[in-house]
Amino acid sequence: MELIDDEKRLLRDLEDAEAITYSTKIPTLSRLTPLRIKKITRQFTLFNKIENNYDGHFLLASDRHTNVFIQIALALRYVHISQSIGFRLYKLLKEKDLIDNIDVLIGPPVGAISVINSLLYAINSTKIEAMYLERNDEGKLRLGRGFELNAGKRILLVDDVFSTGGSLRKTIAACNEASANEDDAECQFVGAVVVVNRAPNQEVFRFASTTIPIIAALTYPIQDWSDEECPYCAYDIPLYKI
Image 1 (cartoon, rainbow, N blue to C red):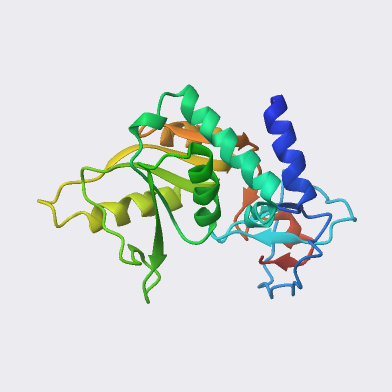
Image 2: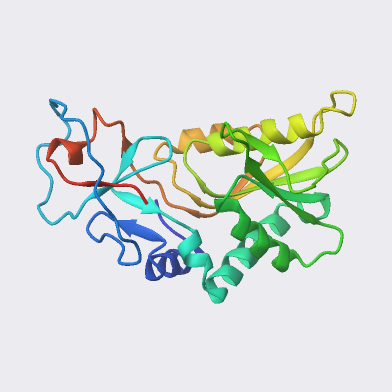
């Protein structure tokens, strides 16, 4: 997939900040210990071998494995990258005529928090609120910190990375649950923004975008596998969780 100039610059910034980490370079910012993985007898038709210069591969929140791990928070610790991401998302929202339809920015913990702040400063509107979800003791998303969300608010969902859309779906459910005391009315979702769309199958992203418009600052498809399918596991290359 061909990247436009803005995407190339953003990708370069993310790589420089080690926010996008490849299996040939385990990040120096983290003291990582390989996970113990269960030995599985594997047979592959697609992969005959893997190059010998791989340091490891990575475990995603979905429990799938990948050779490229994305941790946007590592980039957002730098103000120039934070501003760049915020203004790029603002520009894309402006092009879609969505800015004037937003009352609330909200997203899942913890990856969305820094992205929300970046976008909030870029929009610079006294009419838009920033809210954050948290997890209860069972790990379920909920609206906390004294925030109140009524069904009349128009919500823009914010997240750092799109893989399958699971985090956005959980965020929608949490928002609807938080507003359910108002005659069971559901929230109004005007769209969603993510920093990176990494979905290996872009049909998943396109299908998710038919429900609400989803905007990505960078589209960068990356392959992932189940542990049974993973070619890196087949060659006993260490697995890391960041």
